[in-house]
Image (cartoon, rainbow, N blue to C red; front, side):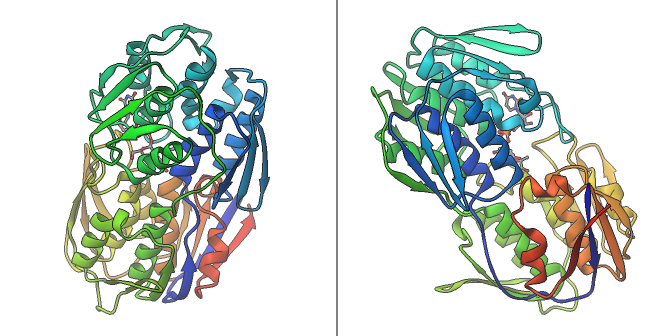
Length: 417
Ligand code: EPZ
């Protein structure tokens, strides 16, 4: 297992280019199952989760090849079985269920377990598919689904779910008739998936709002599609500029998709400006000011930026509060930040962060993808050296992070631990 060894205190300076979005690429690549023609996916991020997705697609019978940031797919004889060994390494594998059922009429997909940040049930996915005519059995931990032909339905989610919206969206594009998704997720990655499907001939309206209408078509075909940039990677680099009091030009930064995050970082004292070359981010104040953040479904503050902004709060001149409203256990970075001198008190879904003057380098342990990013940010600002262990969590969602940070002047080294 690798670790990062980071020596803090260097203000980051220079230009960084954001990679394709992990959370848009995953559902869009599973959309290859729906296609009747060969297809080219562009701006695909080079991440562990992408490799896992391509392995699963190959297992399912889709002929996929990866060449740098391009994926070519060709339809093949589908084998609708997603095994536990793959699904347990990436919960998003459940996104193959809707496409397989609508394409083939049957599927066996291992029920994804929980993960570090929560139970992560998929009841909304199954409930929506049942309304479209699917039946499910649970055998030996596998979901076995049957659907002679999915039909349109009006589906109202009990809570906003990104994956649930994406699974039902992909099931509905080839179903018979009209499907209406209410209380649908509005995330930019859901919109990117819908735009990809529309580019292949799907009939979708309302993406980006909480009511999405889909009229099923006979077949989907297209040539290529370029994945949107990763707003969470971009947000993480904005936070890196803030915590190191640096000055960055961030290219391919999805400014609109980050409005809530940018508003909060500006309130903390950062200067963030959209320019024709990209987004310029700087932090010239002596210290950042504390603020309050509550995570919400889009367009609210994204839960995937909660750990990163909390790290900035650790060094703010006043007290901050964070309320995690999406997942039940997304504060595992807190204990690790405390090892570096942070003053954070957690009570249930809330955390109070009293700003301190300095963080100190320490040995810390990554527990999940975004917690790892928050520990790297803390290391960049801390006095001394920080060892961030188990950075395989980081490799799932950040492309070449140490190279990108080193190019901005950071002292970050990947070491076999
Ligand atoms: C997606 O996960 C993202 N992953 C997550 O990013 C992100 O944190 C999350 O959306 C919220 O924005 C991908 O896109 C691959 P949800 P997803 O369904 O779809 C509950 C990262 O760091 N729920 O919107 O699994 C669920 O427990 C990852 O990149 C049900 O109860 O999230 C959670 O509390 C982490 N039943 C809430 O809804 C269901 O059937 C939101 O989950 C589905 C969800």
